[in-house]
Image (cartoon, rainbow, N blue to C red; front, top):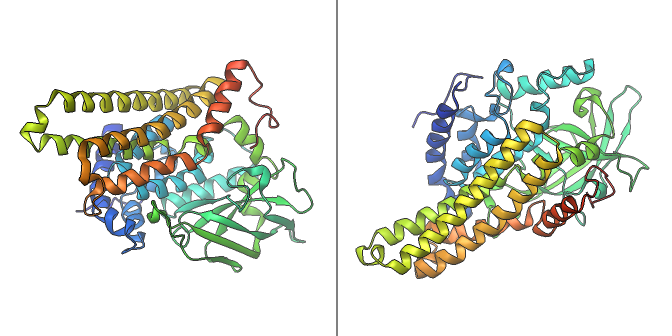
Length: 401
């Protein structure tokens, strides 16, 4: 199956992008079982994504990308997630790392930030470079306030970064990692910065890929930064200390960037269950099973509509109180819907749900992982409750970010 596009070229029409995502998903699907079982590291899936040209989905059209907004991206991710959930989630980590920068397209920036933005877009489009996020640390997860990785300035204006990250997706796969760190001596403050660290920078190393019960294909491992030196040009947007405040105002990438992937997994669960019932005329003619499928379809349709509404609100008013609440609601509902559909599937499909030879068993495990990804269910509900009560959601002290 030929997927490769000329460098930097993506379809102009969204329907064509969806068709490309379907074609790419079909190429990813055969790898899902082997990667999940540990028979393959999953690196082939990211080669497929690179060659399809999808790394530039969010990059503005004038820079050679597709210029997708949050809503369109969520739809594409759901298409990929329905065919290979782990690959979709790993692919999302690339877009989490660059998404906020892509959204700055058309906004005049200071010279250093403008240079950084142009460099990153060129690396993604012409270099087909894969980025990843390196934030999570032992004891604090992905919360920026808990970051202990530190940096110090060098005499020539660069930075030396030292620390350890506990869960870095695309470990050993990505070309660059966007690393969260704080200036030495600022522990506990909200001043966190991000730096772009190359996989082959001296002092960068990765541990063994974590043995996960699902999503093994995200190639998640620990990362050590042993006095890694980076030039000032790799300070994200050329500004120190603003990362937490950016997250507070516009949390959609960190909170719900991967919601589309879990929506796709939920869609795959319904598709398998429907096919299972349809394969037997007796089962297909049962009013009881028809009602069960109807309930599953309604739940999934509600989740899909909420994800679409959240995306539309982000695209129309990024950082607004309504958009920020909507992405938390979407993350919560999708995280609840997948496991609920999984329970329905087990009841309907019986032994097919536990057979390792069939994809449903893998999908059931994958769906449950939505609840451990930020924001966790209780954090989403707290945010929505505070929004309902009129709490100032832009106050960085209102939440444990």
